Every structure is written in structure tokens, then in C-alpha cells.
Length: 228
Picture 1 (cartoon, one colour):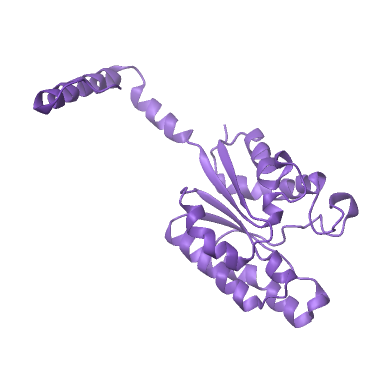
Picture 2 (cartoon, one colour):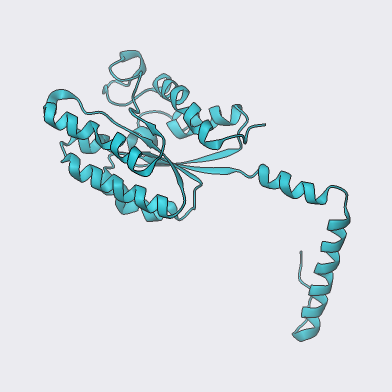
């Protein structure tokens, strides 16, 4: 609504009187109160996909990246969502913690937290990775943001002790914060040549589609009865 031109008390009075008249007219319309509920029910849920190259979509077209494919699937299932891609290739849990406040400035409703793969590939102490993820989850919880924690699993080349310590990070944190967990981002895709790029580390378009098909039901469960 354009403001009434003028200065001083008279212009304020005219604006207020006009606004009250419009509100009264709107309230008198049939179904006005019901429309408020409908608008709230149809509010878009903003989701932040926060991770490394697996989230960013390294080696695939932007339209084939995990956040984009996931958004298309969830929308096709009847949910009103927007999914922002906050993946940074090469990022570690330390890097994620350093940029978290900037990422959360957009006030997402849900965060899909996928970090730790690069820590594992570099042989980073699992205790440090856990500490960083714990700090991120603490900030999100304090901000009343719902989180889906997406885990990673270590190979055996670092030794059984390392693998055990790393693999225990995600279930422990999910239990601590009482949040849903998808245990292994590459479940159903790892080591399948048809679903991975030449580097054997990053899923191709078809591999991302497999991941989306497995994670989408968890995301939709978090969205509840919004569909339809």
C-alpha cells in the first residue's frame, strides 16, 4: 500500500484511518479467517542442504546435484519446499563449523547436515570431527532448527580402531540430540561403477537419484502432513 503524502500528525492519522478501513473490509469478506489458516498451512518450508562436494554436486550439472534432485522429488510428492545448496567441495567439519553462522543467517526451517567425508579421507582424528559436528548441532538446536543428520562411514584402510571411532560419531550425536539419522550418504551407491564418476568417490546423476530415493522419505516424514 502506498503511503499518503504529507507530514506531521495529519498524515499519520489519515494512514491509520485508511488502514483500519481496509482491515475492517477484509474481515467482513466471507471466509477471511479461514483463508489465514490456509495461507499458513501452505507456507513454504525452507531447507538448507549443508555439506561438502557430495551435497554441492561435484562433477554433475547443477540440475543433477543432490539438493536439486531432492527438491524435485519432494515437490512432486506434494510438498511446498525450497532447498538451498550450501555444499562446498573439499569442506571438512572444521570448515563447516567456521561458515555455519553465515549459512544459518537465512533462517532455514530444516538443515540436512552432511559433513565428515573429507575428515575421514584425510585421516582426521574422529574426536575432532565429532566435536565440530556436536558444536554445529548445538547451534542449530538452540536456534530451533530441525536437522536430518546424514552420516558417513570410514573404510578399513585407516585400521579397525579408526573405523570404529569414526563410524560411531553419527549414531552417538543423533541419539544425543534426538534427531533423525541417515547413517550413510552413499548407501546403495558406494563401489557401484555404474552409479559413480570415474574417481570412484562421487556419485553420477544416476547415483544421486538412488540417494534421493532413499533420503526423500525421511525428509517428507520431517515435513509431516504438509502434502496436499
